[in-house]
Length: 83
Image (cartoon, rainbow, N blue to C red; front, side, top):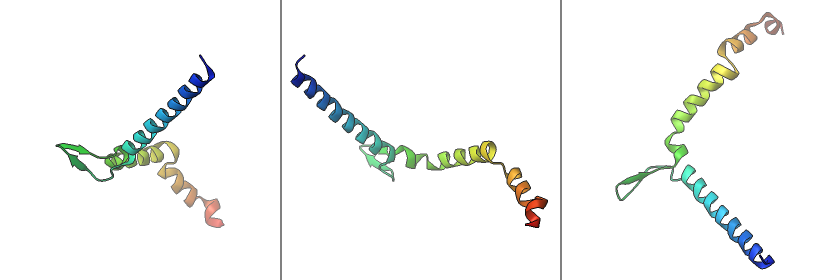
């Protein structure tokens, strides 16, 4: 394969990858509000599931990372109350 052919393949591959990533990001974030097109409703994945994602993330943080009991114990410990 000649160097020119290799260079063209590299450039076309990079351009194709750039277009695919751009389309994927647009589908994830946009449109923020539902849009009806020919009977189909389109909405970005994150805006559609924002409430579900936030509830699951909050639950994960509360149960796995920092529990309310740990925070309460730290705040009401005698060492902290004296300071």
